[in-house]
Amino acid sequence: MRVIFMGTPEFSVPVLEALVYAGHEIAAVYCQPPRPAGRGKKDRPTPVHARAIELGLEVRHPVSLKGAEEQAAFAALDADVAVVVAYGLILPQPVLDAPRFGCLNIHASLLPRWRGAAPIHRAIMAGDARTGICIMQMEAGLDTGPVLLRQETEIGALELTSELHDRLSEIGAGLIVEALSTLPDLVPEEQPVQGVTYATKIDKAEARIDWQAPATEVDRKIRGLSPFPGAWCEVEGQRIKVLASRVAPGSGEPGTVLDETLTVACGDGAVELLRLQRAGKGVQDRETFLRGFPIAIGVRLAPKEDGA
Image 1: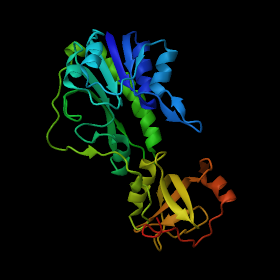
Image 2: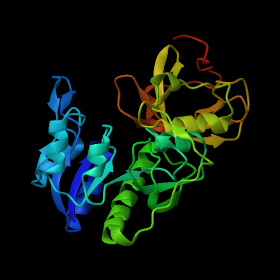
Image 3: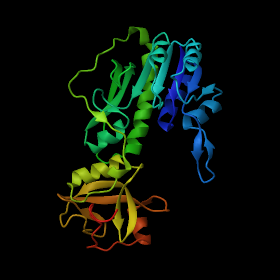
Image 4: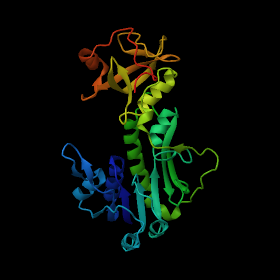
């Protein structure tokens, strides 16, 4: 098929590669514009932009698709379908209508659960046992369109957002290839009105660990916010990110270190901290971290209400 691909971050790259390797003709790749990054604040192309150039594909990065000129340029590509995955711009109705088979979105949740911006983070933070990928026919509403294909997967007990992100990206890549191979025969399934939830964008203000919360909730927050923005606490006045954890036996005053393996008491139960990062340092496993920054048994990490 003649495909317009629309995506921006690393999550979208395996999908673009899968479409190319499956033999589809990529009419153009749309992504977000390069933005300043790094110490020099030089414009850096997005992951999709960089990979598309390596693949020899035409790249377009308009700041908006609302103008008649951009919409006409999109329609002039004469595509069979547009594949959209984490693109980052709202698609106006003329864009949605331009390809023969419309625009298909690869969404990283089991719709209608977790419509919106951060479905992977929210699924882990909510303690969902399963998630998946939906191939959705796009319409004007936020992730409201009918679903053409879906594939479920379990969320591991210790799985981080970064790990689930990579697995779902690969699932999405395989599922969109399957969808395009049978597209005319697929029967759209309207989303039920029951069970709708919204995965709001992650706010950095959510990232501070509240040790008064139950251990299961603390653990889900740590894993759900790993690697970005990273759940954090204060240890002897220093901000420490906690990037991996598991629920562990133990009890005590919330925020208190209970043993030499960095088990910390919560409002109910305890969590064992497995991977940490000091400001300006790399991510370290617990043993390496403790060699450079010892934390004694009985130290009480700053509770949520202390400090800024």
